Image 1 (spheres, rainbow, N blue to C red):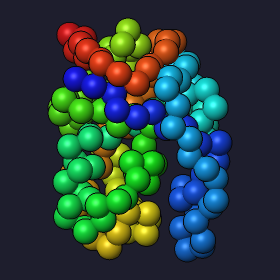
Image 2: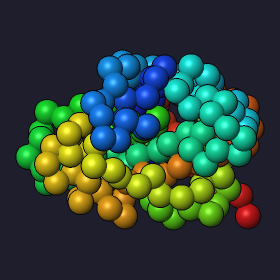
Image 3: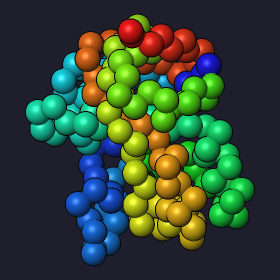
Length: 159
């Protein structure tokens, strides 16, 4: 299992922009991020968004990203276009919905699919939203403080 990318952004480009233009906030790739229980990722747009927020951190499958680029004919699409925090390979993210797990020692609760929206068609390419239905990633709550780093990772399910 591997964390390929970690992304943060200080502002929203799509969330809350429906019917208007996309925002212009940069999304930055970082080698590590600090997860804060109940708050989110330090420096990210959803940090402290609201109590018990379902998307304190978001995960996306690297395999799905590669398949998406092929499916919509966007081989040069950037992983940052997904607007998810952590791109990871080697785990079934939908299998973590409703489960608690640790990743690099940080504890999370998988809440729900990170459902794709129409903005995906603009950010990646036409057909992206339809392709991603049922595989848009995982929204999770952060249950313990800790650091996630790009690199090898082990996931442990909490029974």
